[in-house]
Length: 104
Image 1 (spheres, rainbow, N blue to C red):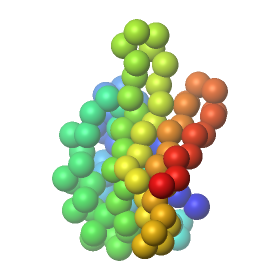
Image 2 (cartoon, rainbow, N blue to C red; image 1 turned 30 degrees about the horizontal axis):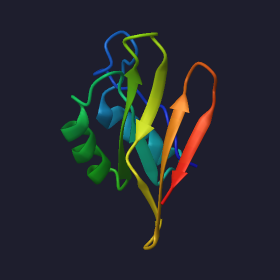
Image 3 (tube, rainbow, N blue to C red; image 1 turned 180 degrees about the vertical axis):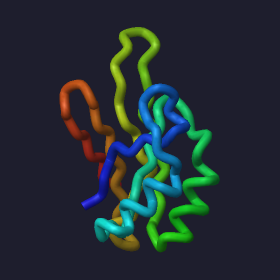
Image 4 (cartoon, rainbow, N blue to C red; image 1 turned 135 degrees about the vertical axis):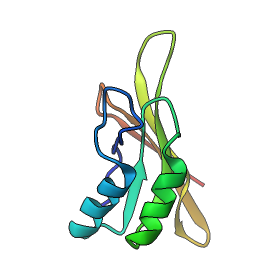
């Protein structure tokens, strides 16, 4: 299982934990991957990479992006390798709970 929505303290008014604290919890819970999806930014990317490496996790790049027109939000993740021939990426709508998978 991969947590798709994890916000750090880089998500103003949404997250409180540091990327390192999130990685520590993910490792304790037995996760091998973690997606950091801060709201409308990727400011915590480098601290997240360092913490993921320290805790032996595969970091997934993502962000929760807000549409300025209607305020809807979706979580967008980098493509995730399934094997050497298949990649998938994911978009998760936090309001509806819908998940869209794109295979290539």
